[in-house]
Image 1 (cartoon, rainbow, N blue to C red):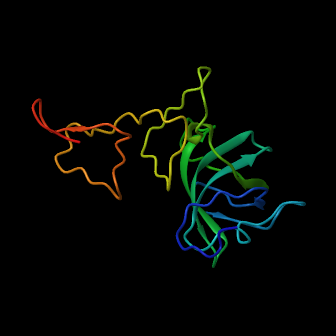
Image 2: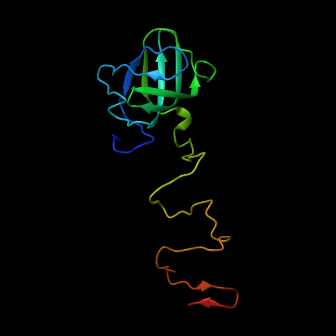
Image 3: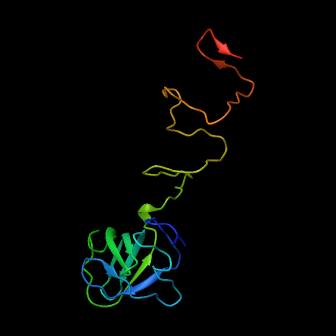
Length: 167
């Protein structure tokens, strides 16, 4: 539950509601499906989340990034994939289900060779592992490298140029 943060990106488990909204606009959420929670119980006003809308009656679906409004319990839609050639679906009358999900195109998964490809920036508070180097980190051409603490050279010298070093 991420109710204390404002304007956050939130993913939560077992959030599923119904809607009778028609058209391509903002979805009005109409309450939780049995044994599920509401968007309101998990999101704050202006939070974003990935959603899916399923219209089983008309064989239509939509997956996207939604912006939640708690005052009207609505979800504004920005489509990622859909049964309408990946455009917003013009939903017909009837009850649809709306739920939080993670689109396949947004998942980070190891491939068959245990590699991971990410299309954006990785932000972390720490990295750990086997000690292998990070690619894309350029310490050779960095003209102003900085250390956050003492440098342990592990009993090696620091070479300044071919004739001088620090022991």
